[in-house]
Image (cartoon, rainbow, N blue to C red; front, side, top):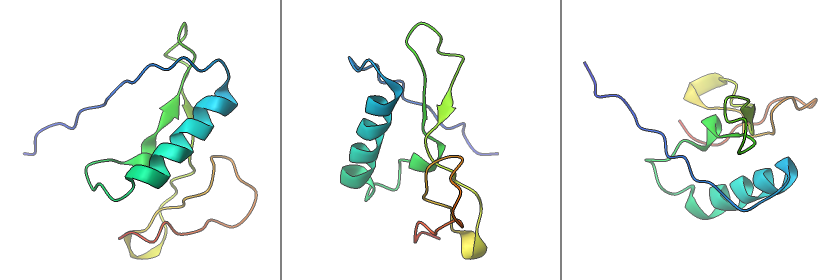
Length: 84
């Protein structure tokens, strides 16, 4: 049996979902080299309604253990994150 993973909740001073998503994208670009972080599962939520979470990335499973790196609910064909 493996130990459970932990989630880090990081409040911001941002006031829109678009700005929160842009910050997630910037963090992904600068921290994607850290294997301890799973950006595919990132969600954002309003401070006063944290149960209403919005996925940032599609994260659909692709071939060879790879995941889609495009935004959630994208219309184009999924693109690999290059991992796996």
